[in-house]
Image 1 (spheres, rainbow, N blue to C red):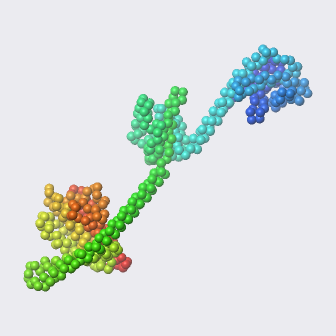
Image 2: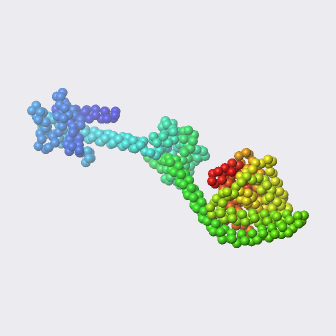
Amino acid sequence: MELTKRHLQDCQRIAALICELLDADACALAEYETASNAYRCAYASQRSPTGWSLGELTPPQRPDDRGNPALREEGHLHEAQIPIEPSPDTPFLVVLWRHEPAPLTAAQRERVHQLVEPLITARAALQRSEQDTRSSALLESILQTLVDGVITMRADGTMLSANDAVESLLGYTREQLIGSHVSMLMPEPHAAAHDAYVRRYLETQQPRIIGRGREVLAQCASGSCIPIQLSVSEVKDRGEIYFTGILSDLRSRKLAESKLRDALSELEASQAQLIHAEKMTALGRTVAGVAHELNNPIMSIGTFAQYCAKRTDDGDARLPILHDIEREAARCARIVRGLLDFSHTGASLSGQESPQDLAQIVSRVCNLFSYQMRREEVTLDLMVDPDLPLVCISADGIEQVVVNLVSNALDSLRSVEDRDPKLTIALRSDGAQMELTVSDNGGGIDPTTENRIFDPFFTTKPVGSGTGLGLSISQGIVRAHGGTLTGNSLADFGARFRVTLPLGHSSPSGEPR
């Protein structure tokens, strides 16, 4: 502003000097305006206080125009127009008004040129400066309206500018940012290593993030960190190196990615359920095919055991064994029928539940495996709380679950060589549910397959030693009772399977049992 004021004063002084030099009543400096295709009087000086306005001193727009009519009537004639063109884009005219016109000499014209050309050059510089100022203001306005944060800094990390988006994104004020080191926006260890990163780049010119984009964490004024996409570019100006950082908020994208991952997980779960349903359908067809083949020999075994028992004296030691055979044959037949119904409808337990003493079921299963445990020198630790309540269950179904869990535990204990094999069965109640745990100190569950142990047809046993259906069917039976079956490896050795059964379980029809 001060430079413009001084420039105007210089122009008026030179115009007055030209009036004196050429004995003119007035001297005007006129600038050509492209938009109006005409000259406009920019600066003027009057030798005497005539009161003429700039408009009256405006030069003629046509060659045959002899000047302002009002001035001509007063005897002041427009005589000379001296074109001065420092560049094709900035034509100017020096317009002289004299009462007694006389031709200008070449020396006079040259002198006018010498006086005016520096002023015109200075005016052009001022106009360029104004344009630069307007361009800078426009650029600043654009930067302030950007959605992404923009920071400029020197090579030493001192921040020079930050737009409004940076304040909104990170919570700092512009006063806190400008003049501070950019490392304040970085969590450790990157904050402490920032200067070393820049030095390495300046020495090697090998960028790691400069000229590229990278996902990083930004330190907010609140102390929390948010994910951003950081793009850094290098700018050189008059030998100085500056860096510009563009910060894009990634929180919305991260949230969308999280929702997408959740959706994919749900889709995978749905696909797994579909596969499970297909496998169960295949299981149903398989069981339906073998059920008739199994029922006949099972019924024959039961009938033959019953026949032999009737013809055995009461005191005969073989009689309890025959009763066991008869009872287990009947249970096998019920299990085959239940498995067939369960694989078809998932509700084979409907109508089979009744109040049962779970401790007796556990005791019977332990008796079934007593010979195997003695032979394999397995120590059984049976812990049953006294006065346990009855639980409404299908005795055959839950007994099959306990048989599967004990059988798997004994299979795992066969691999134990450096410690005494031990099987622990615990049964307790907290008043709301019954809890049964079967633990062993065998080889445990492989962490890589732990999440698949309940999948149908999945087994870690050697070929021919297992079908991979035991745990899957057991879990289905427990779920049909409204309970849960889970398994996990123990800290030292072995695995633990936990069955929970609600004491207030309702049948599939919704009626309490």
